[in-house]
Image 1 (cartoon, rainbow, N blue to C red):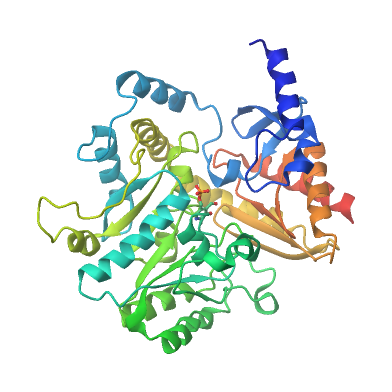
Image 2 (image 1 turned 90 degrees about the horizontal axis):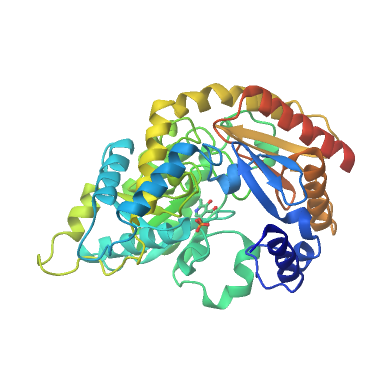
Length: 449
Ligand code: PLP
């Protein structure tokens, strides 16, 4: 199929809505043709089908920190496809998956030692929730079935992740079929106390006490686990106040509740450490990961668990399947091989140190937007930041379309959710590219004033 034919087929299929796009206003995007079609990606840039080059301000969807088209990753993918393209992961395994599990366990905080592979963040979260319930059951504590999420949390779109998630627009269509026994902590963001904080806000550790309220309501003996993102990414970079995660840990430990950190965004360097858990000095009982582990090139997710959890599952008869759970593509050889190369590059180039060096640049640049009339809050931590705009009642959806379009015109791909623009640039960005990105954003905001 020649390129021209491909393009006209693409335009036709778009106009007919053949590709039902995820989390998308399909009719709007299909009506905008080339504006929304990506053709090429290289380093920290995309080239759109209409020829415009735009800076990738969110590393894809937080998943391509090493940029696009990295020759070593492409080569690893090719070699693995030639050697072992697929092997069943049930009752057998292969070297790339086994050695990757050991490697990820080594990178994780002490005590987290075993990895269960999935293919996405959503699958990782549902896996972790099932492990939590199974763990208590195997210990003879099966009354612990409740799962506690958090308002404004995002844990993917499986029934488990959606139920513990706290984003109303994702939940309202499915209100009648949410998992039973789920409750939510209040979110850790209080504009009046923390607006324009740089890094972790000083105020707000006390918000973790909300867990005691839920314990008092449901009784600890019914609660299996609490799941939180250490930094809430999808709802606009909500940064944990100093001491907040420590307090959650203490309360969970006191009541025998498992603590799960959903590190699908924060894992593999976004906070300047392998995991946010290490940045904030708090060790959960499980960590979910996905996205950056393969630089977004082949889907992969997983859960890292403590040896206590693993041993609890391994305590039954040896010939029995201990956890009746898994995916056809758990630990897929292509994903595992790519992940090894991604981690090799991260190690060799010390991307954690790079993120720590870039953090103050992004912080300074983002906070330089303070004073623009539409800006309500600016926040940042690690190599992430968010601009929250003053709400425009009735017109927020329209504004987010406008922001996106202006972004394309200025040369920056913007991730706008509601009134917030989130940033998670590639780790390979230079300080000048970050300055340029924020200059483009300033132009966009000025055009919206
Ligand atoms: N958990 C968190 C914290 C996420 O940010 C996401 C996606 O953004 C998910 C889970 C879901 O991941 P996926 O889209 O790979 O299913």
